[in-house]
Image (cartoon, rainbow, N blue to C red; front, top):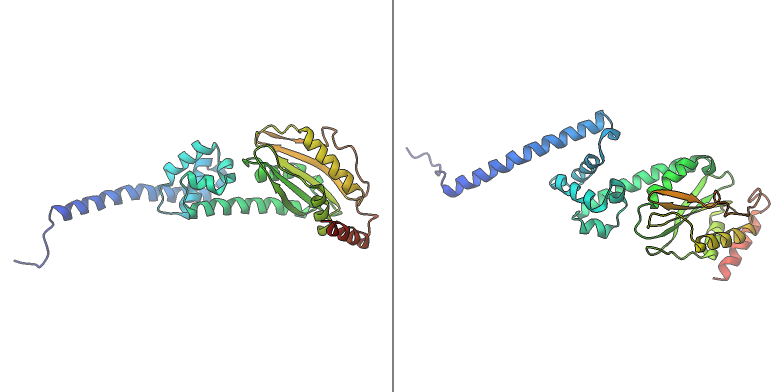
Length: 274
């Protein structure tokens, strides 16, 4: 009897075999990812090791990617989860990450930084030093080039804004005192914390670090702006120039004797000479 169905020939059989093999390889991967999601939600993300957290992040942004082998390559290449999350876009692309995966890395990192920054907005930074160090480490400790950041604080020492003023090379970043003071005036800051990283990992201050700190302190003092500290961040630790006794002058009651009109005048003067 002719049923109208075509017999399965050699080619059709081969295709069916490949499909069966593919389904067989997908199922364990699907089950593993399902278990990882459940563990993350039920047991808490803190109980997942770094490589599993990275897997969850990558297969969430690209469900069809072979993230298990990719994660191993990423950790071998960069050294740690923190360094993967801090890597530049070009470096991530060179490591094999797709555009959606790179976007996922950047998204997760920025959410974490904003969460940490929110705590610094809510309370005096000088009273939350451990959280400040954690934030600075997350922000720049693993950067491959030097970055100079300024934390602008209000009269209660709460964070107004964290801004990167300069991005330099592996061992140098230019710092312009005039630009630091001009921006402090624009934001109405009463105090500053200077922060930069040493990509070498050694946070020991250089002669140039000390000199530029004193230059900024002197310029800020004339406008009743206090420089609390200059933090140098390395991969294995940090150095506070204040703790080292290298910040020798400060302004008492910063901002208390400087009126809004005098700050406005000072800002205009800084703007006019640029």
